[in-house]
Image: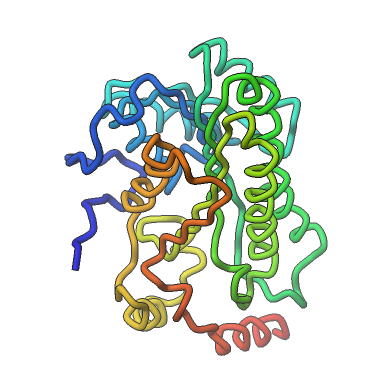
Length: 291
């Protein structure tokens, strides 16, 4: 069985990196990555930059992406532009894209990685909480894609990779908001792939599984004991790491996937086929709500 590539748990660059793909795979390309200041988005930016790509990393927190950009530039020698951006606000997106185009002259790749999530039973989920997740994940993905299409992709082509989830494929306890939002994004992927293919725009989704060293796993993974039990029951019997996800995104964004569009690539070690719903967790939520 193949061993996973090295990774680090924090939002830091890898101390060493061995190229599994050709080092200049994305030479002189420019990628715009939402949610690029931390977690999976940060590692995607790093791996892209280690393959010759310049990046724009965007987040609502300018200090976070500014710190991330300094780390990325120091580790890779490529350029990285940090921008403050709320994907729910089209005027802010337009201004950010204009700034990126002024800096680099082009944007070849869009990675929609910004997301919001938490655990909550549907019966306790507020209307506003559901709307907020839909606004960030689904509306935010459309907003970013639509603005990039208008400002660059329509006339020059491009690649969009939407980071989604397998939640909507099976029905996951405590995740109706995120599952609904990500399922909508996967549908959007297919629609945009059909409509924008003639403009040489490829659009794909990538659904990570439980990934070590991420805020998502810390907040959503449950107790260590239950997570270990679930992971050992999955086909590859381990968690994935951020470098593995970044390598898969690199494939979809690169010329290696030149004939791939409208696809959903699940990168979870087969976990979505075997992960159980935790009925006890739902009962715990119900009990705490009564206190």
